[in-house]
Length: 341
Image (cartoon, rainbow, N blue to C red; front, side, top):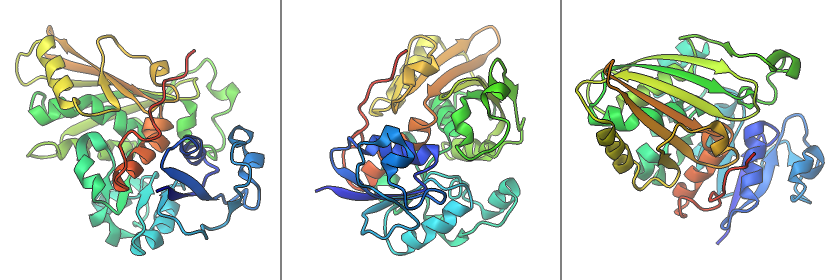
């Protein structure tokens, strides 16, 4: 059986990346795609790198019969587009941030507006299979993680679940320019970002409560305190998160490596690596690479994590979730090596 997929907003970076990955999927086919600014154009005309889709036309709405829908619209607009599909019982994946925070009050606090579909929040499942695989399999609405939170959570989850670290963590993260999205506007031109590194939304980024919420779900007690500082670096793709947390007890490097490797033993797309990973090690693929280190002098756990913000951090993760929701092998269509150099 081939499942029919619809993408809402194929014209954004995440939407077009999902289309690229779906082309080689063995059991799913992109049959419908929307795009607010390019409706009426063939996908191959709008994006020549997707010329393999010779006849697919970008529409205003998804009018075909589909088995699953992915929305890559901006936050708030995405919830409005997802809600009708969820209410019809069609499995839906929101790549935006609308269903990640479970508390509608937290959504309003961090995004500055009431939630567009608060009645759906209770059924939304946070779409990180390393933590929620079984729940994703049974879900009709999946909230795809943010790219920064996916990296940070995968770097910290084993230690938090084991009770190895204190409840105060620091995440120092860097992102390529594509993380800002295709329609962001000024400030991301070559002349702006080349030869430059800058922090932004320091301790006030909307991914901060997402990280705290999902770390808190790993053990009993109050949510951990998360200090999150993102940086923009002059590259197209990639997330690099260096995460710091005080250790509750003395622990060896070997013990931490065993803990991490056991935790991710059945995770096809998270690997615990011996050397500090580079963002290029995950360019174009669906892997997250995690490297934990024990700073014995200072009693700290330091973990570096990397992934491609458009694949494991967005479209690839959406397809991984789609596979689980449809009962397909988790790695279907995603076993691809990184691009190098």
